[in-house]
Structures are given as C-alpha cells and as structure tokens.
Length: 280
Image (cartoon, rainbow, N blue to C red; front, side, top):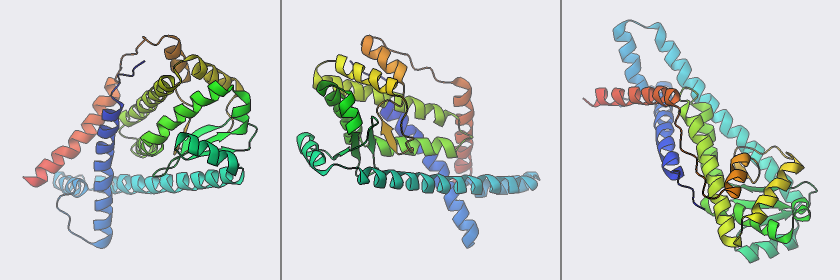
C-alpha cells in the first residue's frame, strides 16, 4: 500500500512561506523597537508605500497586524510548551520502568509504558521524540494488534512528526490570513497517518491487526486532550484510514481549495513584489 501524496513537498513549501512572513515581521518589530533602519523588510516598505499613497491611517493597521501576529505566535508557543511539559510530567509519574526498558531495547527506540487504564498511543517531543503507550491499550488489544500500533508510532518517532505537525499547526493558527496553511496542515497529517499505517502493515505483514486496533480505539472514545506537539494513533483521518485498510488500491485525488490557494498566493506574492521593489 502506497501513499502518493507529496507530504514532504507540502511541508517544505508551507514552512518556507510561513517562515518568510514570520521572520520579516520579527525583523520589522525588532528594528522598530530598537530604532534600526532595515531596508530589506517588506513591512517597512509597506509603510513607505502607504505614506506615499496617502493612506497614513493604514500604517497603524499594518503595525497592529504585525504585532498581533507575533504576540499570538509567542502565546501559542508558550502555551503548547506548557501543555506538553505538563503531559510529559504526568506520563512520567505513571511510567513503568521495567516495561519501558524492555520495550525500548526490543525496538531500539525510546518507548515509555505507563500504568493507565485508558488506551493511550501517542508520539511526543520535538528533538528527542518518545512513544508513550498505556497498560490500558495493551490490555485492550491482542499482542499482534499492540505490535501494529507500536510500529505505527515508531514511524512517527523516526520521522520526527511531532515537530513537523506542530510547526504546521502553529503556522496555520497564527497566519490566519493565509488559509491554505490550514488545508496543508490537514493534508500533511492525513498523509503521515497513512504512511505510518503503511509502515506498520509492512512490518507486521497484515492490515487486519492494525485495522482492528483502530476500530477498538475508536470504540474506546477520546480519552486525553493532546497538545499540538503530540501525534496520537486514533486522532486523525480515521474514516479514510479504515477505508484505505479495507481497499488498499483506493486513492483519493488531491483537491486543492482554489479560493484559499488564490488568496494565500496573493498575500505571499504581494510580499515577494515588495522584496523585488526594494532590491531594485
């Protein structure tokens, strides 16, 4: 079973666009507060253009957009870091050391087993991701189903998906005036879940165990609210994943939302034009 959607390209293009805007806004804010003269900054050029046209009042709107975006960005980062830190400490309090060491050695990865009655299967952490599994999950699944879930999470672990998903989620939330970023975030998460499923099937040799584990997780219901930095087993594109497991040859075409793409491209193109105007 293959996933043909270009998840890597979606991630890189989205990160490039959001990184360009946020870095320029950050440079402008620092230069404004420090009194620096920054020539190659699209916000500064925008200010000059507004003055030349005569729309001086719009300068304040530009400042409001820049600083509100940066404040929202810092707030999102701080809040998600706090939530992830609390969750990590909470998981640590329930960790079973012997099982953690056993499973970590077995799969040559950082796998934490926690004593918790609800089913938990999540990968978390930016630069040193860990896989967290609960005794409730192990008791609910058969050994083969549990192993399929482990391999699914190991794909996220080795691909460092928590960091990538977090960057896309924060960018889409902060840069609300580029709605295509929200679509990219959802497509990327969907593609990564399908790739993780494919990896688990490749390692176990069958889709049956993974499918039954997914169905059991759905029946168990939503248990713990996870921060944006976590990738949970049964939290994304569940219906499509089940459909793909039942019909491995099925494929869904990539339908790009034209209106969102056009608006977002116009915003980004405007920034690029301002760069060109300054350089010339």
